Each structure stands twice: as C-alpha cells, then as structure tokens.
Length: 514
Ligand code: GAP
Image 1 (cartoon, rainbow, N blue to C red):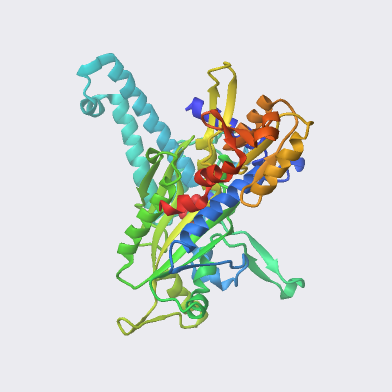
Image 2: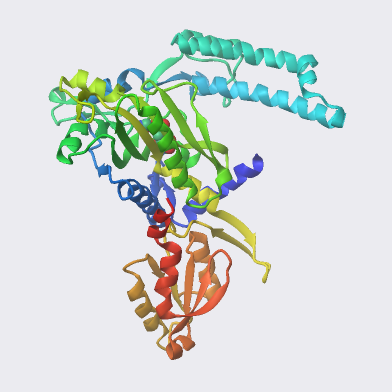
C-alpha cells in the first residue's frame, strides 16, 4: 500500500511538473479540493470529453446534446430532493477543530478492526501452513472473536442510526467505539449535524430583493427541466436520450485524493427517457454500452468492475458503479442509475406544469422513466493518467525514463516535430511538414536541446510520435519517426505521415469499435 501511495504522490507531482494539473490559486497557497487544468491537462480533458460526446450523440441517432446553465431556479432543488436529502452527517473535533464525515469515521474504524483480524489470520496461516483452517480459526481464536463482535455491534448500531436518521445515535456509535480524532487524538466531539453539500449564493444585486440560489450539484437537473423543450423541438420519440457535459459543485466535507473528490468538478451525463416498465432492460443495456466504451480504450479489461449498490439514492430503483483500479484501489468512476419517474414526476408537482409524453404506439400519456449514465470527467482523467504513468529503464542505455502511455487517441500532443539542428534549412522543412499536419492533429514544434532530451520531454507528456527532420530529409523527403511506447524508430516518406497518424490516433477508428 505504501508503494501505491508513493506512486500516487509521484503521479500528482508529475501532473504539476508537466502542465497537466495545478492546485487552484496556488500563489495564495491553494484552495482545498479545487484544481486547474494546465496546457496538457486541458487537451487531454477535451479529448476525453470529445470521445464521450461523439460516442453518445453520433453513435446514437436518438440521443441529442444540450448545454444548460449552472444556475437554476431554486425550486428545482426542492423538487429533485437535494434541499432535503443531499446531506452528509458531519462532526467536529473540538481540540483539533478538524471536521469529519461521521459515517466515514465509523467506516474507517470498522476497516481498521477488519485489518487487525486479517493480520491475525495471515500470521496464523504462515504458522500452520497447509494445515491452516481459516473458518475454524475465525470461530475459535479469542482475539478474532472479540474484534468480530466489535464490528458486528458497531455495524448494527450504525445501520439502525442511519435508518432512523438519528444523528444523536450516530454520535453514540462514535463514543461507544472510542473513536479518536486522527489529528488531536482526543475524543472531544461535537454533536453530529446534517451538512447540505450544495453551495449557495445570492442572485440579484439588491440584498433584500435577491434570492438564494444554488450551484448545481449534478448536471442532470438541467436535462430534466428541459425534457419537454427538447422532446418537442427535436420531435423526439421515446426511447430517447439527452446528453450534457458541464460543471457540478459539491461542498464535500472530506475532499481528498487529488482530483478524485473535488468541490468543483465536471460531469458527463446522459438521461435516457423510456416507457415505464421497460427501465430494467434499458438499465442493463446502458451498463453494457458504458462498460464497452471504457474497455475500448485498451487500458486492460481487468482494471474495471461493476459494483451494484445495496443502499440506493433517494431517486433510484437500481444502481451500479463502474469502478476502475486506481492507485488507491478500485473506485467509482461512473454511475448507471435507474431513476424511475422520480425527477420528472416531482418537477411536474413542483412546477404545476404537465410533463408527460404521449406514446402513439400504445395510445397513452405518461411521465417517462429515466435511466442515466453519469461519469466524472476528472475521475476519468485520473484513471487515464494513473494507468499511463510508467517508470522504466531503457535497455540500450540503462537510463530511467518516465513515460505517459496515454491511449494515442487521447494524448494531448499527437506529434512532436523536431529538426535535428537549428540551421541548414531544417527548421523551415520541419515547419513545412507541421503546416500540413497541424489542421488535423495537435503538433508541437521543438528545436531546443539534444534529440534525446526532446524525446524524454515528449515521453513525459505522452506524445505518441516524434519525427526528426535531418539533412537526409532535404534530399529524399523522408523523416525518422519514433514511437513512444516501443521507442522503435523508422525512416518514412513524409507523405506517409498522415496515414500513419490517422491509423493510430483517429477518434473515428476508436468509435468504429463501439
Ligand atoms: N446525476 C447522478 C449523479 O450525480 P453521482 O454518483 O453523485 O451521481 C456521478 O455522481 C459521477 O460524478 C461519479 O461517478 C463521479 O465520477 C463524479 N463525481 C461525483 N462527485 C464528485 C466529486 N466530488 N469529485 C469528482 N467527481 C465526482
């Protein structure tokens, strides 16, 4: 685990050093859990978004995209349930003044005891070798039994407190379990309070005329409130979907793990409107389609898994996550939720406007059901970059190199154009080649430093191809192309470059595999 933490730290440092991600407002010591994407980060992010947008809107005739405003009428969030139910239970330690999510404190406590049990089992397994019977050991070892009892009792009390929505009982679980603050080491806790995760602000310039509005905590509601607009103006027939990419904001109590849990982040959401009673078919369909989209990038099928939810959000009747194996373990990157008619039904109630669809096939009016796919752009970014980060030794020279093996189609820079020297007409020739390719691909021209150094810089930002323009280029119009992952080099005619690039980096080819 320490090893993975170390790698995670290196990835974060690399993201900063090579212009992928910076802490927001760094010159003022940063803003917690808010990040800026740099010159390479924003290219990679845009490529991820384009892959998603095109897969949704170009490959599905019945999906269209919109771009709704971040600010919405405050009633939206009453209808969606976010004003009442988008809460986390928080608790403060009076000595350290640190704030925690009460449920996370309890979950971490349970994990620690579980770890103790696992250690006992590991020790015993080593001691007894093949003769070890884990079941028997769990049933008879007193330390394991005592720890298991603690887990069972704490869990039971915690689940009951959650079900009863009883904040005092949640605090009692913390007290009974003797949970201490990781910073001060004390048990001097405040009461548990509900903490709404929505950011609020004022709309309007005159204070007594202004009203409280929220920064949207999910993009989905911008789609729900536009359901009729899009359905009517686009003459959409159910089943159909509306896709959107945009910022969302949550005042996360425990925001950590770099861009995994941020306070300002970006979502790519698609709401698919279906006839009631068919939602489970579509739920399964979208689970498959979304998993295929992820796997098509070739990061390795074993890096993904589904996690079906036991505890459902207030709006869902089925939900699953697609998890990716990040440096800190398998974590949620995308959610697929069957949201029933909860949202449209509630908007109908709260707005007093009829939000229904007349289904000509069955001659019936109804409030459509919704299956949504919701993926965080930043978490997708984290999957790509952490999977790509590779430290390796170059066999020929024994040198260490850091290379980002980003899928070429998503790489921020597709091609580096490198004249061998700054004279003899090589820069001019290099620019000539770049002027042909730059309209289709993000190319970078570099003439400073040795070729070796320039290759390393391009490796570090994940550029899949480098071409070198030398004196032979002026004679026979060929260049050396060097491939990022294998470091193989070959001499190719400049008029073949477009085909080579197209073959390896075109989004079209990737979309065709879906
Ligand atoms: N409309 C449904 C919805 O918002 P969610 O599971 O709360 O569902 C969907 O969020 C996705 O948004 C998550 O799978 C994750 O990728 C991303 N996400 C949620 N909270 C986030 C945060 N604080 N920081 C970064 N990404 C986040």
